[in-house]
Length: 477
Image 1: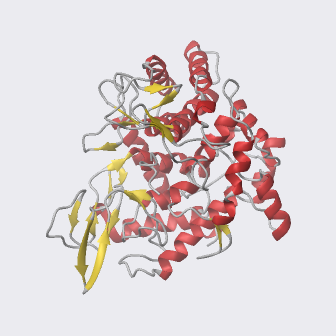
Image 2: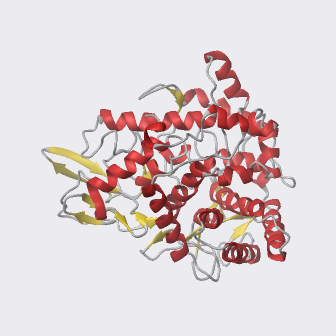
Image 3: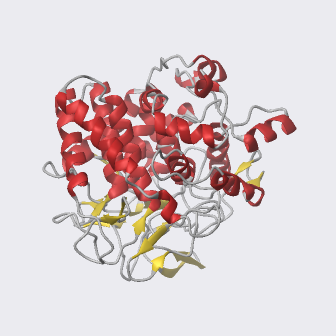
């Protein structure tokens, strides 16, 4: 499943405290984590990428860079989440972070909305997936995207919680963020019973695909259920969990809800602390198995499943190991077949990859790095191994390039992205905003719980969780 076309062993070994430990989740105390210097460096370099590429006058963040690109509204939401991280780390002053945030919110509040196919940026409060970097209007024939709007709003609502002071600009940030959220007509996107459509085109209407398979869509549903102005019924969540049995698997590890690419186990977790809170389905599974299951634990198990898949390496791809792993949606070398060592291999361009699902040997560092809160020691080891093995071929002043493929070491035909790097294989030439953002935010959640802590007090999110039947942990505190 392609997120852009949906519309498309022990933490002590690394000197870390696991932020997902039951004790911490129950007490709600702020994490005290000693972070490896290389983790800090990666987070800083990736943060600096957002500072470098985000338009200072509008707040628009490009979908990719350095290739010329349109804006991704989800990447804007991730940039908004990055600015408070910079304040927390001492990489950006609160004044600059506040200014950047307010510029973005004012810009989006002023963008035209309407049913027209051109000259507008959204409709019914939703925004188009991609916007023109110069005008802020819909780019091409891209869809009005419910998930990308939700990710944008995630960054906005977090900003509203972080900028909680009396300063006039912080007051304005809170006001605009709430008003942008309240104008989204979530109920308009429910055109099939208890299902939210993935999007809409002015030319053809609603997309014939809904959020009804376990994936990154939890944030969409919870923001929609919690809306004070245009809520959808709680039955939307009941419909969502109704199909879980299709995804419940113990392949490559412990039982968990499987979604092949790891972004599905990360995106909603950027803004929602799922540790210790459970809906009716998770409470039922916990009672049946005797285990304390929640969506955080589910993502931890998904990380282990991906790592086990890399160790087993059923496709026989070069480079896969316990220390080098990570499949998600990312760039790839192109859509072609090529014989390598007497075996025909099929490769893909941008695609969602996962265990047994369009795996073409392309590794995305963000898949592992954005899993930091789930398994900090394992991710730290993977970071070190990738850098040690492939070095400057994949790691630069802006952190990791989007993806690489050690199996494809030569190519006579055309490459859609990237180039062949001697000693490494194929390496992408771009950084993608929707892959960079989770690295910064999820490392910070693993270090200080920054986003999670502030979002504990986000009333709209709490309302959505409670209406969906979540109880326990910080939600009941």
